[in-house]
Image 1 (tube, rainbow, N blue to C red):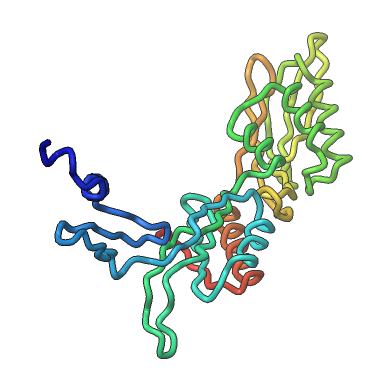
Image 2 (tube, rainbow, N blue to C red):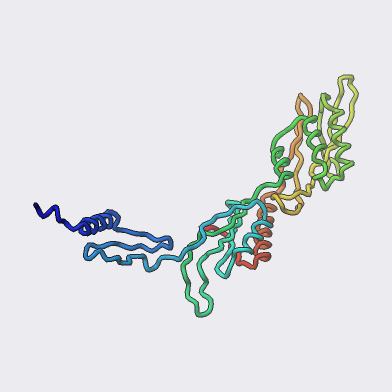
Length: 273
């Protein structure tokens, strides 16, 4: 009988195990370490990156208001955390696992920078409604209806005066406007003529002041808007333009960032990573 009939089965098993090891010579563990099988005795050698980071949280959360940003940051922040406020992107971001600072005898240490909570600023419902109308010229009836529906947002002129102006706009719809002059109080007075040749005047303010939030979840701020008028053959067209609203938006953004820093105890910096 040949020698193959008396082969040691343990040798075949060892050969199969060796083949399996060589088929997958690299083993990675859950904590980021990496081991390699080498041919000499199939020893397991640690080839992990000596500068690897320990397991860390990998989570980027987006919230809708500043209160949520503060609550999340207060729950997870530590002495590494900072706030980055990017006015161009309209974001306030709490970087919770930022790099350590060079305070005292502790040297700087790199951190993953993978755990953060970001407030993406959203226009308030009130501002969005007014901003949609801003810049265009609108027919008397359409403009009067808009003002009536949103009169609660107006701080000046008072509501009763503004509603009276809206009724006058609706009453003079379809009349022919001849001219417009500026009055001593700054308002504009328009002369109109009906189909029966009856003449009259209509006074409209040149500016209104709103008290509305700029961003969702924030307190109202004062915003000014300049009325625009255009006399045409089809009647009087009205609209408005924001007055220096971008300055108000930037000031509000900075105030929100500083308030978030105060409520979390974190350092705030304006810019982007």
